[in-house]
Image (cartoon, rainbow, N blue to C red):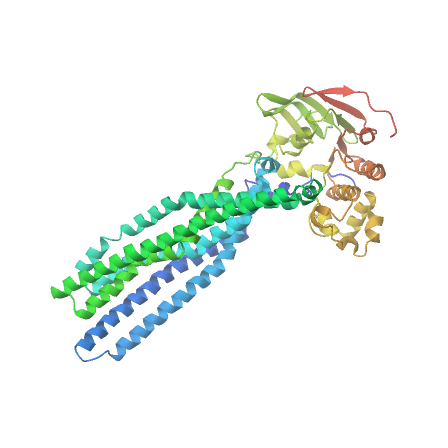
Length: 585
């Protein structure tokens, strides 16, 4: 295969995909899902109000029927029908609200996880050094579920129940007595004030629970991923004790949250519900004695006063869901608020620059870089790699060789100087374009759980079987794959553990063949393989390097033996060394 200069060829680096960058708007499917969720929540609010009003009508008819009994005329058929209709409407709304919530919650989870995944890819590799994987997994699983449950099962019905007291008071004023409605309205501000007080009191408890839950998830994931190491060094029991302590800490915080839930229920049931209904009864009795209300209307007033407490009743019933959901939403928003280190530039892409080195595919021009201001890593680094050249980059560990590779791929940005790809300033080009120009074979090959085919097609989703077999043959892996019973459908296991280190590296080389990028970066590709595997890998790399601009980073002489030039990093700058002798040891 011949490299195709400048063509978008989205491949191995998933962060290069345009729908995963920070500046990309949500896709139409995501917007549609968000719109459906908004409609479901709006419908839930309307249904909550309709159901409450239906009960208010039932209570009015109960009062009228009670007056009929007192007058010894008894309830009328119309009253029976109205009560039955109101009960049916209230029952249907009570059935429909959880149904809508059940359908809305999966959509909400999908939408929220899509946002998180896009942001994770936008944050890039630098995020891995700031946040433990287990914490991110906890946020994207348990945190998203709790946030979606809060929005679906608590928020929309609660907003509906907040509107219900206003509707009930209007019904009381029109059908019974405006004075009674005005007196009851005095208590309405107590509802949002109480809700806000509950939220403020238990906010720290819910946040502490989520923080401890995320920390425990991170510890469990670390233990599972490092299980082999723990067994080899005999630290399994020690880690088990740590995990037990973490689980106990989570249990204590859950119990605190549940205790808060029970306290809210006690306050709502005893202080508000009983006191409010008792006050409504006193009001009804006073208005009855004043001749404003009949006995039946007084009964209806007392019954309808219970509907005014619906918001607090709902908070008491779903307090645990609400507090956990709010804490999860804050957690998700805090994660999404992290600005990506690298973002696509604003404006139109840059055109090729005449100031660049003629014919250079990869050029570093007076580049400075530092992770911290007081410790410079690169200072005035300049070099070029042209098509067909194989430049070896050497130097002691920690000198900045992998940093050079990360800068070339757009994982980092230089503090000063210019990095050019095919004559274009990388800082002015989309990240997807920049990463499409480069294929990487690193010292650690990450293989995803799945088949050989699925791992190869990450580099070229539309690759045909003939192209895949051609890439495998070039990577000296075709014969091995053909010997497998399932061929390309062979499962590689988690992280590719079903393959040897050498086989995994050659699979990475096959992916690089499929990506067909004009620039190739080799970052210690033979660091963890035996000599036999090294020879096979180097032979495959020779075939891959043909006609490409190659930057080879290695400590092993065999990897850079065929380099046309050698560059040594010293104090952050480049020193040109004589090319190595032909041949390999």
